[in-house]
Length: 217
Image 1 (cartoon, one colour):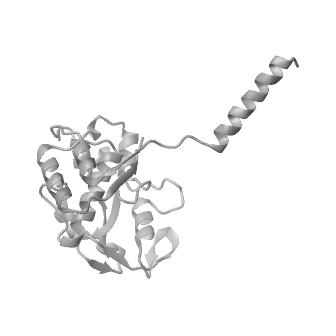
Image 2 (image 1 turned 30 degrees about the vertical axis):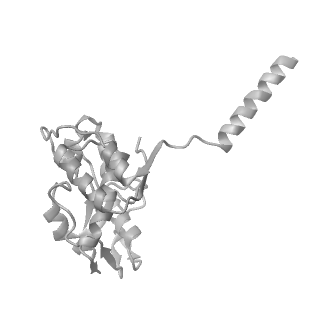
């Protein structure tokens, strides 16, 4: 091997080694809450064509027998449940932060899409691929995206945004606003004018905490 080729080979090995030692990190966003709200892009919402089935949800991405619903229940339990055959859960205890309630039966809890599927569609997901919508609907990559909450409270929320719905438990509202903003930023979703105004008002009255997210893509 010539000196030139040996040098080139050595350089290539060094580049590969550096790449392995310092893998590329995912792009992210970090700013105080009020700045984060100000940065949210405003656009008119469009519901045309929405169907919940366009967001395949409760998949079992890791093939362990527990779908997304149960993965969230296991992760959020304040008393860890026993996981039985078919991912049946027993002996667990859960806290629903939106209404300050505790539950011991999984059937009493819904898994809340912090940003509802219909709201996501309105705010940009209508232009996504089915694969991306599935990733949104089963987002275990950010603990703020999905939450185990009291079933009838989640049903009362429906597809509303913070302009028309906030947790009935008042001390939970700033957390909810923070997590809503983080989820919108993570998935690069827009807000409508009423939503932006409501978020701005809440941000001005909540602690100006730093919102940090890793973009979903």
